[in-house]
Amino acid sequence: MPVPDTGAEPPTVAEPAPGSAAEAGEARFEHTIARDQRIEPRDWMPDGYRATLVRQIAQHAHSEIIGMQPEGEWITRAPSLRRKAILFAKVQDEAGHGLYLYSAAETLGADRADLTERLINGRQKYSSIFNYPTLSYADVGVIGWFVDGAAICNQVPLCRSSYGPYARAMVRICKEESFHQRQGYELLLTMMRGSVGQRAQVQEAVDRWWWPSLMMFGPPDGDSPNSARSMAWRIKRHSNDELRQRFVDMTVPQAERLGATLPDPELAWNEQRDSWDFGTPDWTELQRVISGDGPCNQARVERRRRAHEDGAWVREAAAAHAARQHQRATAPMSQASQSEQKPEQKPERKPEQKSQLKGVTA
Ligand code: BYC
Image (tube, rainbow, N blue to C red; front, side):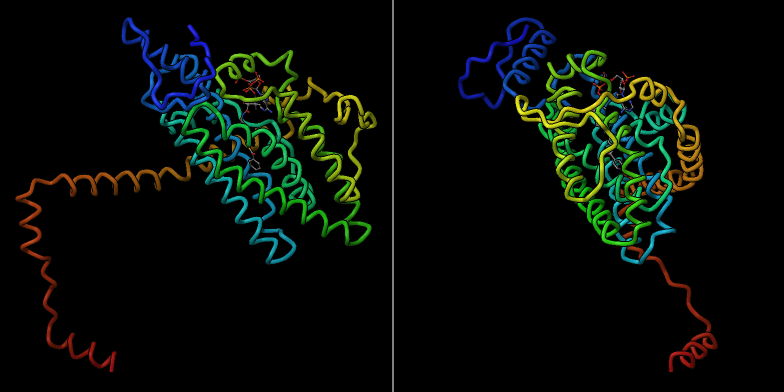
């Protein structure tokens, strides 16, 4: 039963309802959501809330990690040392975002190794946008401008998501995404001041990435099975169509300033709505790409699988190191104090070795 919002000052701790522990937990959960406060990992939460969060956060983490590939392919082909350093840093940021998000998923009881398995086996999704190829360096700029721009529209509201660890992870991620978007736009501005060929490259990249970027926001609201529930739980704060509209409104003036044309003949300013009207993305294409049949799906997942296998020795070594640290930390006092009293004896060097060393350092 949702607890009605009386408009009074929200209490820091929600009032539990009488009844069983589960009923009290549920009432506290509803109360916290209604008051727009945060659910934390140890709080009671409905199974559906937990499952929805794991699904969305895991997909989001996978998107960040798979999203390293299309731009990462250009690190060795960057046109200058400066561009290489910028791109390197950006791709590393995406890895960091993936790690924060996997950590947030772990606070819900998910296991990161299991989530990775699910990605590799095609049982969990990642953003459709990363199944398109990067064909020129202008694509790096357009990904920053469109893809990170779309990410900002979608993710800034997630900083107010009802699940505390997810919302907090998003704060830092959004700061970095906003820098990523600016570096992409700055790269495109530079190219637009360049040769006729460079300007054509920018326009060609804009033409290819525009519609897939609109699809990042998900299917139209009428075909979005998860939105209503996610919005009621305040995991999502806005619908897919609302966010798509924000992105279009933000991007059209930026395209004008850049001197690029967005490939949509239906784009028109709507006085009444105080927004841009735009055409309909090809939703069958989105469904195709989501279900594994995009231009790069197989290559992306295969590369992720190989990277995971190649990294097995690192994970094993890290686990062995952690186990040894733990063993040392929990060793009985007697052993610990013995080892403190008896520092490791350095092997005594033979006299001829000492003199040899002296000769070297003299
Ligand atoms: N691609 O009911 P709906 C980044 C799925 S990475 C693939 O509307 P929901 C970056 C959806 O999952 C940023 N699948 O779902 C990284 C659902 O399938 P399941 C990635 C999609 O969850 C590197 C089904 O379609 N951003 O910024 O309410 C370099 C029905 O959809 C897509 C996030 O992950 C899609 N585009 O809403 C540069 C943001 N759209 O799970 C940049 C967090 C829909 O039922 N996620 N599906 O089998 C969200 O905000 C929401 O999950 C979505 C979808 C808006 C994406």
